[in-house]
Each structure stands twice: as structure tokens, then as C-alpha cells.
Image 1 (cartoon, protein in one colour):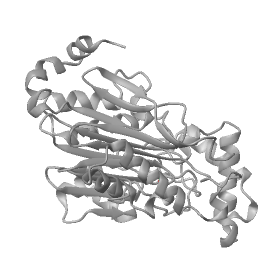
Image 2 (cartoon, protein in one colour; image 1 turned 135 degrees about the vertical axis):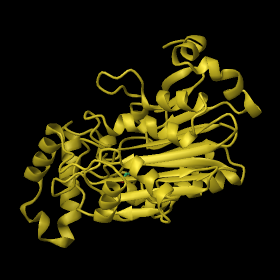
Image 3 (cartoon, helix red, strand yellow; image 1 turned 45 degrees about the horizontal axis):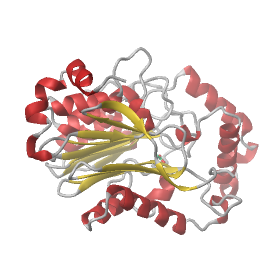
Length: 360
Ligand code: GLY
């Protein structure tokens, strides 16, 4: 890993440092889910690094964050986001995304969007070019086409399609016929593929959330995902729901999530975390409060493992107005969350709430 001055010089952030890093005493920082610090095949910058460089050279914070997550959306090797994301039960890739601009107090989002590799940019277009906050399905795609996005018939890669076919093979033949059994059978087939090492648990509900602050203390955030693997077509998770998968208040902080969206939608926890920070909690304590709340609200048997704990993964990321931050997870995860500051991009271990694993 480069040292601080090597990183600042190599990225060009050094030139911006006097003005952009020291202004008002806030140190710019970008945090993201684990995939924010992975290299795209052949690429030279990770998402958090790209975002940090943009912020420190004076780009709009949201533009910088979106340029960062675009790297992951376009990466065919990341099957949790954008192009090559794991498809729905019909084999169709449907994408969700949201963005929030702290200083402008504006938000945009898309749900169940097909055919556009970078849904985060469509969410930003909804924010900037419409009087709405959330567009879904065919309307979202038609809007994207109208404002100039290229749409494609299929965002699967050979990898995402092969995994979908394996999931179909493992799914009970009445998967599509018995509404009472459908979700459970589909979920158990998904779990068996995680156990067999075909799908990383982080990619089953995989997503990227990315939040950043500049030297003026301006905060923005973006969350983008292909959602739950093999979901019922039309299912929208927490990522595009303002307050759930993302929330930014420029006076307080930003928070976002990855993991099982249904568990987060119930409590709109990104907003909850920001409100806890407003009340004075450190980002880590605020985010852990949200995890504890999710755990106590999870009472359905089908959602509990043999220890009586949630049978799913969920992570929160929180960043406050002072530039303090945290990444927390229900369970220990192998790869830390992504961070980039003046010392360069790196991974930082999550604080976790529960021992063991979701399917124990
Ligand atoms: N958190 C991503 C999803 O559940 O769709």
C-alpha cells in the first residue's frame, strides 16, 4: 500500500490538498461496502479511490461517488451490481439504485430497471431532470432511454446466467405454482448454492453503498444493486428506498446498507441511523443500534437459524458531519468495508453484532 504522500502524489490529490483537505477541519473521506475496494478486471482504481480523488480535486461529491460505483456497476466480475448482476427468477437482471445530494437536499432512485448498466446514473437523472424521486420498471427504462441512456436487451454475463440455471435446477418444480411455498423454496435453493460455494453470501443480497464527505462538510451517498439473487420478478429491495438503503442529511451524516433488503425496509434503518447520529451517537453506535433493532424485529421462524438469530446478512455504513465513520455487520464477514482517505484506499474490519454465521 502506498504511504500518504505517495498516494496523494500518485492520485493528484496532493495539488488539491491545501484547499480541499484542510478546509474547515473536515478531512474528506469515502466509505463503501467491501466491493468498493476491489479492482475491476484490469482496472487501476477502486471505487472508493476514484470517488476520493474526485472529491479532493473539487468535483461535486455525488458525481465523484457515482463515478466510483460506476466501476463496480460495469464490472462483469461483480455479480451483485449492474452489468452481470445475478438475475431474477425469470433470468432477467433487474437493477435498483438511489442517490442523495446532501447540500441540494435532493434525491433520485430507480427500481426494477432493466437494460441499463449504470442505474446509479439513471437515479441521478431522475433527481436532476424530473419532479419525482422514484421511477420503476418499464417507466424507468423509458425515461432512461428518453434522456439518452443506451438500453440493452440482456445484462446477464455467461457467469450470471449459468448460476441462474443452476438455481432453477435446484428449485422445487412447483416453485412457480405454490404461492405459499414459493419464497421459502427459492430461498433454500439459494442457501444451498451459498453452502456449496457457488455464490458468496455477500453477493446473494449483494449491493454497493458508497458515502462521502468533502472538506466543506458536504455529504452525499449512493446505493446500487442487482438486488436479491433470483428474486420474484418485480421485487424491489431496500436500495432504492430513501431512508432504507440510503439516507443523507447534510447537517448530520449519511448512512446506507447492503444485505437482506426486506429486513431493512421494515425499519428504514438508514434514516434511523442518521437520526441516532443527530441525537449525538457516534456512527458506530448508531449503526449498531440499527442492527440490534433488526435482530429484535426478526421473529418469524423461517427467518431464524438454529441459534434463534437472523438467517441473513445485513451491513450498515455510517458517516457523520465530522468525518467519523463506521461499517457494521450482523455477522463477521471475511472482507472489511472499503475506505479511502488521505492515506489511500484500504479495507477495514467490520464491527459485528453476532457470532457464528447466518445459516448456523
Ligand atoms: N440490499 C439489497 C437488496 O436486498 O436488494
